[in-house]
Length: 136
Image 1: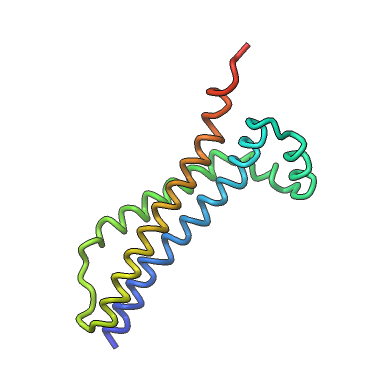
Image 2: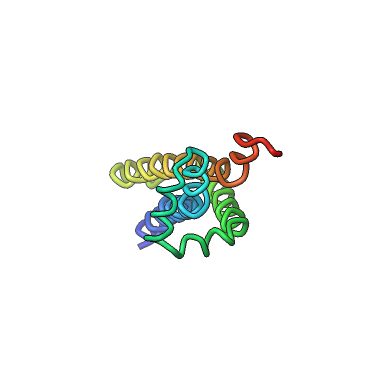
């Protein structure tokens, strides 16, 4: 019974939180970075059709600061959990140990991908307009 609890606990720590951070960082990408990217690339017509088909996206964009803060906090929390559990022992059973190591790798890849998406979203939501356009 205890072994099953340890495996399930590792499953939740190593997959659920990184997956949640992935969806949060994808949310920052869709709400804020995608419109900024389209405007930066000069695709205003595509942005207009996107907003007409998905009108709620403009309401979410009003809260981009809060969305990015929440996503950043979740990413930091996920990173610290991953960092502190990087040397945690896996079960003795070989199949469970192999599953544990696979979960750690998957968790790491999801975390890195989430940080990459978050960084892209942050760049296009907050920095791209200042870099690419001159202030007159």
